[in-house]
Image 1 (cartoon, rainbow, N blue to C red):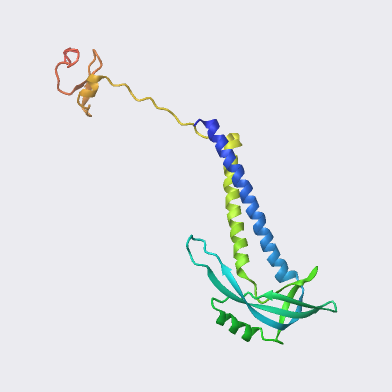
Image 2: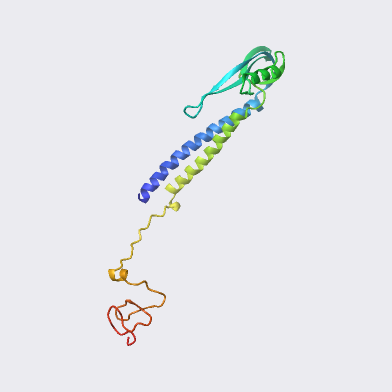
Length: 222
C-alpha cells in the first residue's frame, strides 16, 4: 500500500470516527441536560400516595442461553395539584429489588397510602413527574457516552490531520537494497579488527600474511 492509499484509508477512518464520536457526544450531552432539567429546573409540589403496586421488570440476558433476570419495583400512584388543578399519575420507583418480598416491603414502608412525597413535574405536561432520588443509571450511561464520544472525536481528528495537513506527511517505507556479495566473499572468513587490504586488488587480507591470497602479490613489497 503506497502513501496515497494509506492517506485515503486514514481519511476514511477519521471521518467515521469523527461522525460517531460527535454523535455520542451529542447523545451524552442531551442525556446530562435532561437530568439537569428534571432535578434542577422542574418545579416541585407535594404528592400524596393513592396506591402502590409491585411491577416486575424482566431483563433478557446478553449471553446466549442465559436465564432472564427478574427484578421488582414499586409502582406508585400520586395525587397532586398544579395550578389549582388536581392530577393523578402512576410512576415507577427508582428502588429496584431482586425479590417480590423486598419490593413489597419497600412499597409498604416508604410508599404507604396517604404518605406525602415531594415530586417534580414537567411544567409543559404536569402528568410527566419524577420523585425520589436521582437515578444514577441514566447519568452513568450519559457520562460514558460523553467520554467515549470525546475519545473517538479526538482520534478521528488526529487521523484527518495526518491525512490532509501538509506538515503531517507520512514517512514512506524505504527499500534498502541488500549488498551483493560474491561467492568467494561469502565463503571466506569474517574480517576481524586486524584486517588489512591488498594495495593491488583491494581484497581484505589478514595481518601477518606475506602474499595476497587473491592476487598473490607480495604485501611487504607493496
